[in-house]
Image 1: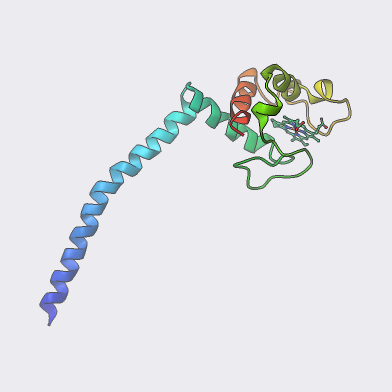
Image 2: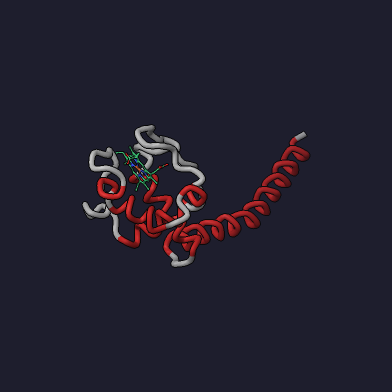
Length: 131
Ligand code: HEC
């Protein structure tokens, strides 16, 4: 009996079409939201950009939420706001850990070596404060 088969397939196709019509714009919307956050200037954008920088520059040595290939050279970065309530301390440490921590630290002097801008450091701190 070919007829019922066909009508079942047609009905399924119709259901999938409707699902796509509904979900595709939603997915596009989500994508837009993410790229706006990554390029915008709001606090969420700062956190997103800081997270990207931290994954690029810090996870080789530090474990933190969102780093899935983290090393263990340095201590895990957690409870950052409680442990480093003064952002100036973090700023100094990220700019030049050899000066802010100890001269023989493994942590590179990111700011002094021009690996991060002042703006990058602010973004990284915004992200660290979410940990
Ligand atoms: C090559 C390894 C290395 C990299 C890369 C590195 N760090 Fe570190 N970091 C360390 C080590 C080792 C310490 C331990 C203290 C010290 O030696 O100064 C440390 C200490 C810290 C501390 C103090 C933590 C605590 O609990 O006392 C913070 C905050 C920190 N690093 C942030 C960062 C950030 C942010 C980045 C990326 C921009 C980064 N580190 C990249 C090795 C590294």
